[in-house]
Length: 335
Ligand SMILES: Cc1ncc(COP(=O)(O)O)c(C=O)c1O
Image 1 (cartoon, protein in one colour):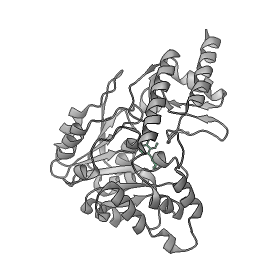
Image 2 (image 1 turned 30 degrees about the vertical axis):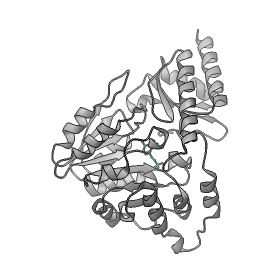
Image 3 (image 1 turned 120 degrees about the horizontal axis):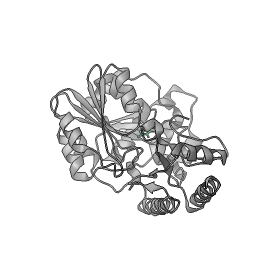
């Protein structure tokens, strides 16, 4: 699958969800969701809850059908026939949605092996009037995060008509940085938050935007009715953005273990702040294919322009050991 994801019965390390699974209160809310009336599609209470959780006013939140709908709405509303700059290598949807509304898209890429984000380029682009800049933080697929002071600099950089779209869909797995209010107060930042990763619910299609009232109002004005289903609304009503501290610590421990294990297998992991690790691998595509024959999915990163890298989701130690054993077996067979 183009964006990752594996068939039933596979060890799926290609889609980067919370490895601790769906929070029980979210699973219960989805199971109990009522969906027989149009009133079940009233998202107001869910938006109020998410706004309280984010520490912003309710009109600053828009519930969407995943981050995917949020990105589409932002492009439709603010991106028409403009200049779009994407800080890459990154999630391909930014360039796709921007191009689909007639924007001229250019990419500023981080360099291997460290993949430190080229923030100076992003700052420069935001100072050019009328530019939409997409930054993914932490970034997919590199896992690199932007620190708090750099985020503040980015949020205050846009000149008249420029906009920073900050996709923070993997932020719950990283150390906390800035509050949403700090970032959106200037009125030039759209925070995109997928709940898919945080809640481990790719089938539910839920995410949201946090931005100024004016930006959220403009997005709301163009969006189609009823795009967010009753199960997604039920999940959003009880969702929390921040992970419990102990869960974040567990994931950080597992991430270190994964990076160490990949290095021991002869791959070169990139330092990550997310719930996945990018690793340089000789013959990455062949490795992903050989793992696939063993029903283990990792993300071949050729579509990110990184044909010699794979991205591996952080899983529990037992899952990691299955992966390490398979890589060793593949290496031994190739030797
Ligand atoms: C960085 C990033 N943003 C957004 C999405 C899409 O999120 P959603 O499933 O909420 O539409 C993805 C999916 O992989 C992603 O990697």
